[in-house]
Image (cartoon, rainbow, N blue to C red; front, side, top):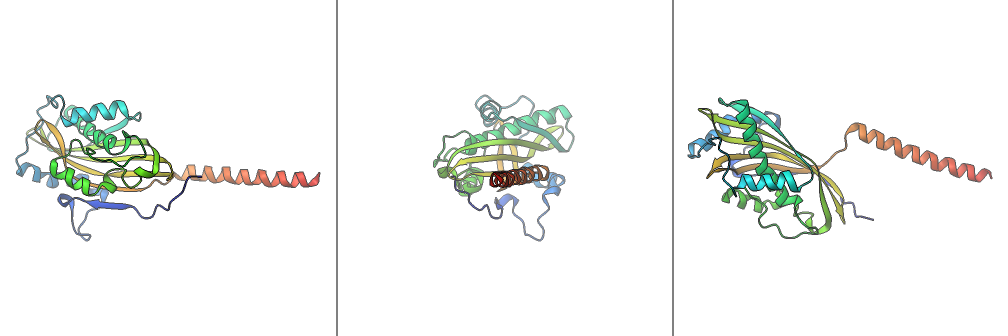
Length: 252
């Protein structure tokens, strides 16, 4: 029988670009309206904007698109989020697809596209800047499946969703925040259902969208209330049926 481990409290870490005091840290529901001030730092650093031509072949976005759209087996729902600055809705949708491709590339490299049990996680952060990849490696218990990889036989994605907020100036996309969520389950020695969620902050660098900051959590995936009630009902019906069977057998 597979070993069931207690899940405990959600684990969370933050990279330095997104760190703030507990007193002043905004609620997650308020992060999207703060996109402009947050990503204004990207403009100061001198990043370029996407000109609409798309990433060059072999860039981080194109690799992520191949991995995320074809290999995982679970489609990623991509939602255009908020816009800060003028940007045509069609361009927003294009940017959202390209940013989501980067997220897919990370998810597949760090979680989905692997033979389990697994202990090697080098190369898990395609589409990250060198600094962000180094920070993600230091936090690989959150940014990959490393905590469970050696004790599971498979990791199966259940749902994948990316909402993309975009910052633009002069109708040119300059930065983006990807609000991400992936639900998955594991089988083997450890059986769990886990929700990975948070946000990635990206800028357009060297012909492609690249992650330079992140704020990600992993926590137990709670069943929906309706499903929990249905499950309890099935268990009660099963127990009732077993008791009735025993009583019937005793009367013979």
